[in-house]
Amino acid sequence: MGNMFTALDQIFVNVLHWLVSFVPEPWHPFASALLCISFILMVFPAFFSIITIFERKGIGRIQNRYGPNRVGIPFTKIRLCGFGQFVPDGLKMLTKEDIVPRAADKLVHFLAPVVMLIPVLLAYAVLPFGRKMTMTDYDAGLLFFFAIGGAVELAVFMAGWSSRNKYSLLGAMRAIAQMISYEIPLILSAVTVVMVVGSLKLVDIIAAQNHYAYGIAQWNVFTPWGLLGFMLFFIASLAESNRTPFDLPEAESEIIAGYFTEYSGFKFALFFLGEYLGMFAISGLGITLFLGGWTSPVSFLTWIPSYIWFFTKLITIIFVFIWIRATLPRMRMDQLMNFAWKFMLPLALINILVAGIWHFMAVDWQRWIVCSFLVVFSYVILGRGLMRGQKLGKRNYRYAE
Image 1 (cartoon, rainbow, N blue to C red):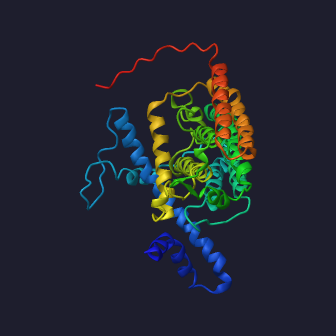
Image 2 (image 1 turned 120 degrees about the vertical axis):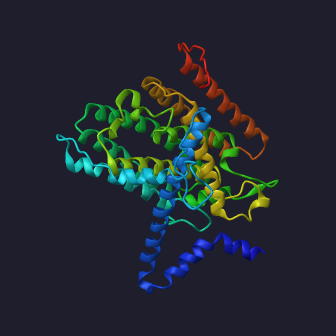
Image 3 (image 1 turned 60 degrees about the horizontal axis):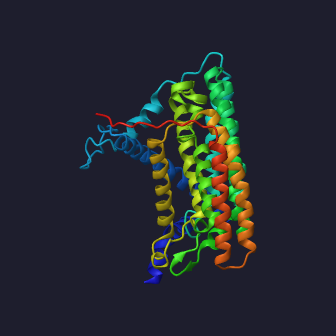
């Protein structure tokens, strides 16, 4: 029975080795890399298509209105339910006219969506999707992920500047200010994991969480510093992905569509795809750092294939992203920047101190009390300081008729 579960868990790895065996031995590394790239290019764009439908239908249900409800799936019982909507949407993007402003820098305007998509795809190279399912088992995988992600800011600036449009430029400046501001607490929240585990290798970070006490997984999120780090990482990832309530760079009611106002057709689709693939990648990193990666939450379910656990956690986090988008209003720019510099950054620095105390204190109940007190006390003090002088009125909600 154990061999059957192991074979099921490693089925994709075994298929990869089987396919690679058909090419000459000197070409094995190249063939393996090509097959892994093909897997990423097939799975995650398809996942993006499906998620867009569930997001639109989910937001429609949450906001008490219709989502896509016309295009069904041919040759199935799912007719006129909207679940085939991504197909005409994709065809529309591919066939729409590519309009470029006369005054635009045409070369930079063309390269911007490409420069945005390539680093996002490269980030998947170091993410462990399951046991022994890492495309590149890099010793500094976490550092590579953050370094390659820095190119996204360049792509956003290229798009806003090359369009020769004030709305696009304003959206690009907003996006860059937001992404730099929230990238700092994002990285600092990950530093706590590196301090405790002692490695930048993502496989090692998962291995450090792959043990159980009383049948419960010992993930980083189940510690005071890990819970705070995960919350900081999750909020910062919302801002890095330009998701509500941090969608200021593309605030339609204020600056049309932000830095890609002057993009249409396939170029717009590449921006759209890049944002979602970036959201999947940063969610996968959060799963790796704080939620045990591909490991099971309880010991008696370890027989379930590791990749199923990874994608189950990924889908859960994406659902929370959608839930937040459907329920929270957009922040003002001053609120967004104050929240990053006056609340999240100090809290991330304090969390580094908490992680250090946790690491060096004896393994007993005392470190739980000390670290939990520091986390709660810091949260309350910084929260009160951030809200001082804020005049918030009572909100009134009503349902659509």
